[in-house]
Length: 128
Image (cartoon, rainbow, N blue to C red; front, side, top):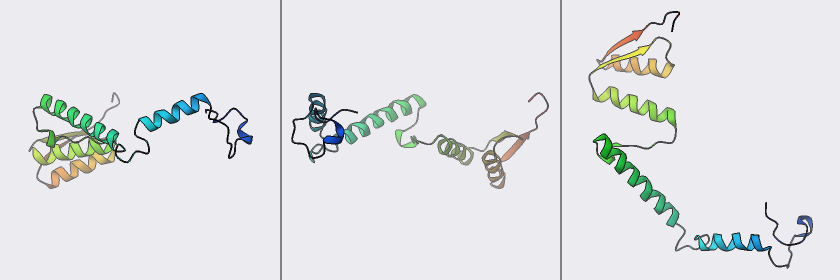
C-alpha cells in the first residue's frame, strides 16, 4: 500500500500536505488512462470487445465455422454442457459414456435417448 503523504497514516485524515511522489504518479496515471473522463470511460471496454472479436474470428476460421457459431463462456462446466448438448441435438450419432460418469453425462444420455438417439453405456471393471 502506498502512503498518501509523508506523515503517518493515523495522522493523515484530511491532511493538506502534498501527496507522496509515488501516490501522485499513480493518481496521474489513473487520470491519463481515462479514469473519471466520461468521454474515455468506455475505451478499455471497446478495446476488450475488439480483442475478443478478433480472437473469435481467428478461432472460428481455424475450425471452419462462422464466428457467430462460436461462444466464449467463462464457466468451464457450462461450456462443456452446452457443447455436448449442441452436439447431441445436431447429429444423429451414438452417445457413448461410462457407467461412472458424472450425473450430468447420464442426464444428457437419457435426453439423447428420449429424442430417438442411440446410447451405449460402458461398464467399468477393476482395471478402470
